Length: 89
Image (cartoon, rainbow, N blue to C red; front, side, top):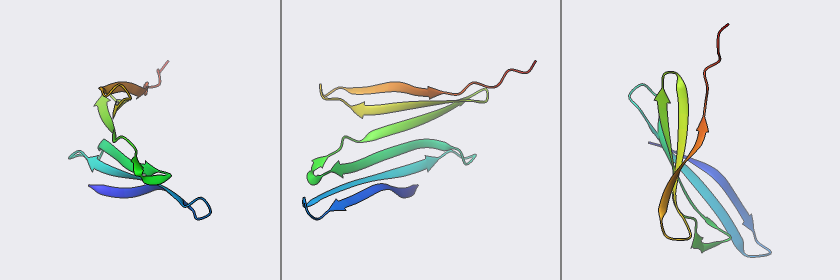
């Protein structure tokens, strides 16, 4: 697993910090399988809900799903992105 800091900012005047980190998992063929994003917003007690991006590779296309705990306390997975292979004429 590879960990990358996605975002960090500190506002000393407001005594606030925001931090996000992504953790990447790869398949055996070195393609991204999942990205797990965690962090906090403005104050360390305002934890952001963990967001998991799941990648599927189907016939040359890439599908990216996002799973996250919503305000209604249900975990929801949505399809965020689908690539389309270019059509050959």
